[in-house]
Image (tube, rainbow, N blue to C red; front, side, top):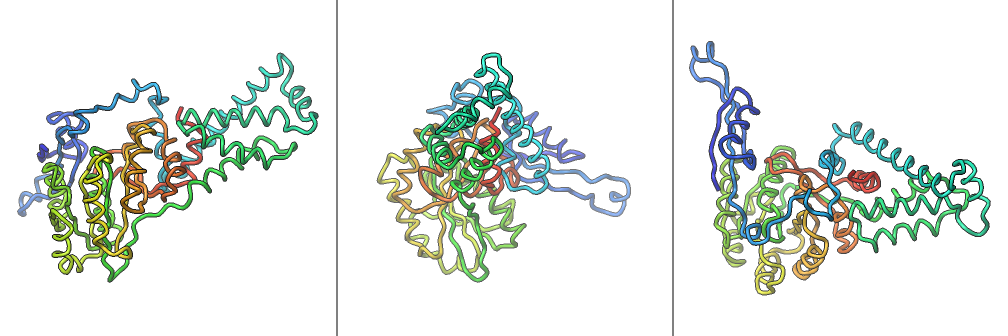
Length: 407
């Protein structure tokens, strides 16, 4: 990993210099304002910003199995503005008004598309005539309601919700509808159904006087180490927690070096272990911290021996003193996600973190994996900037995004 420091009149200027020299993939690791020292310098000199930036070497997994760019992947419905809509996933009060307006516009578009379908089905008849004829049909839902359910079904599929889960939602809603139910009520029912299926988000909680070990598991290349750094900063700044980092990924030296760099920048301790027995040796010393964030090795989910190593490490800590988070990339194919989640389910119960939301225009896999595993949703990341680009996932906003679509 290449790490350098750049100076500029503003934080943005320093970061531009970093990207100019290191390339567009340069990641901001830290930024600070440096005041001039000395009486005369303070009078005649302006403060400068120092930005520490890094470029990580390509991960072994990404070198052997590179992902296709989003726009080249026919399974992803990508538009230039799609990534901006991912902010709707997050629980951010500053964005609530903007997010609500965007969703209202998308739902209006959905209804307009429905009206167009009604016109087509009416074969030249007015919308009112078609609706009137549909509503007089006996022992069936009106044609307009069936058409709208089909539209919602296609909307979910376009957002890459698996067909079996989209079918489940529509079937459950259809069974509860009455002939007089209007389109707005159908949409509200489906929205509520999705929110209930997503369940309550569970995130890290700090309990004073009790040391908690937080294990991060998942395949190589999904961004575990960067996610850990973001959460460490958040716990320190927002919850005033005493945090320590623990590296168990000794198979990848670069991962340990990266975590060490973050630890030095945040001025927090880093412990490196090679087995669960070494963790036991540090437990007394680690007991003075509120939270221990553990970066485990990004092993292949197909290798049982490697999974067993992680399982022994996790279970060396009592259940009451640990939490486990499975970190997944939102860009991974659903078929692969199924295999990964099944393999890690044999290790421990976990909560779900999704990374790389900025690299895809659809979020159906978040819903798919929640339905498949039943594991609680937790955090999502939408960039590599530390400590930014991470937030708690909000089921209500995810439901709106699924119904509004990524287009």
